[in-house]
Amino acid sequence: MKPIRIFRHIACEGPGYLGDFLDRQQVPWELVCIDADRPVPAGVDDVSGLVFMGAAVGVNDKLAWIEAELNLIREAKHAGVPMMGICFGAQLMSKALGGVVTRGEGMEIGWYPLYRLSSDNQGGWLDGLPVEFDTFHWHADTFSMPPGSQPLLMSDCYKNQGYVLNDHLGMQFHLEMTEEMVESWIDKYGRDLKLDSCCIQSAEVIKEDLRGRIQRLHKISDVIYGNWLKRVKNHET
Image 1 (tube, rainbow, N blue to C red):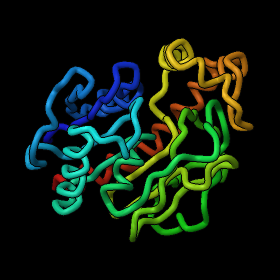
Image 2 (image 1 turned 135 degrees about the vertical axis):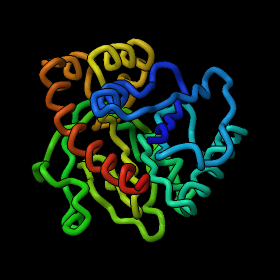
Image 3 (image 1 turned 60 degrees about the horizontal axis):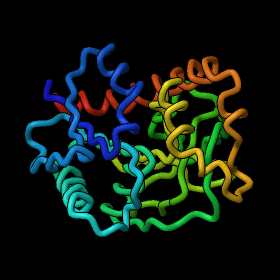
């Protein structure tokens, strides 16, 4: 099987639990560290899938590597190579595929429930999950649905939380979190917790029963990652 190529845009927002999941499934993967000035590889013939992680910049920022990734996403769509975008990555995919990325009304940070939308009655992307479940959030921007995509999830704070387009999955939320990553983000981005928003939890609330929350999150991750991986493997055959 060709490797899955994961793009990291800042050191503290790496693949986290996604890497553990792929290792457990014995799926090869490689990391492209944009934050370490690695170039965006051209072409998609040598990969089975692409994953775009979070970032500390905005999709609309004028950066050469953002433009290169936007072009790569369009190429992957044309080639039918499955993609998964996480937070910034989902916004990046939305823009590349014809959507619009804008600032939200206020940041969403912490553990908040997502609600399944009734439109997911055909694709099976959320099969095995309840109608409502908690995930981790840390974002200020939002995206519109790319043309032809199907919305999957919403929260009370942000209407657009997930979408699918063919074998491509965009998620505004973070399934990849580990206990260490949550602690690291609070240390690095803790100033965000002081901003004025009804959708920002305190550090104390975020860390409450953190181990249990992470364990429950990973059960959700296993389902969604697994459903995407099925499509990656189908593309390989």
